Length: 147
Image (cartoon, rainbow, N blue to C red; front, side, top):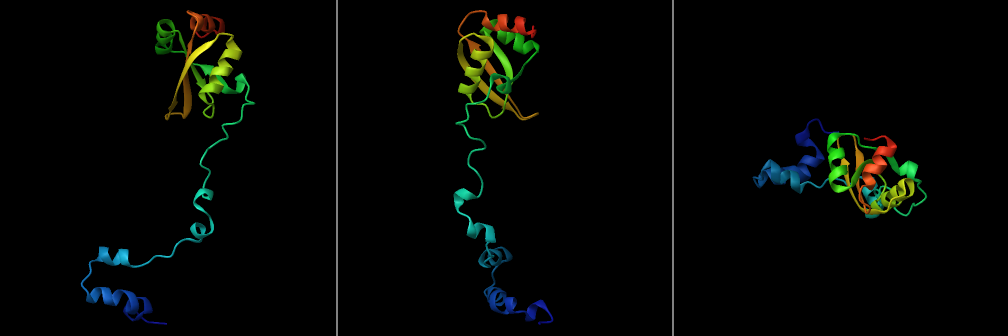
């Protein structure tokens, strides 16, 4: 076993020729080959982690599990009255077609369009559901006690 790093096998074989060529530390770092972790050698590219966080083919979710609650603030009320749009907090994994179907089943009004956004503050999904019938959002909100 060598006493110092300068006598070690790694220094004599790898680093000494680099120092003789006047290579910088940065150049030496990139020339030294680092061993690959065993996990990368065994698994393929697509087996490292799942590409989808959940299965989108699941359609057995009920409206109660998809729709959590309605947003109750002034901005939501203003959007409700002007654009006939109801603002809901929904399950993060729910897709737009699932939200559309759940709202139509739960409230009994045809849905025209669904826009979604994910809030990073509390990691929730907010759905803006626009209805085809005029005044449907206000009727639903007054019946559900949102207004």
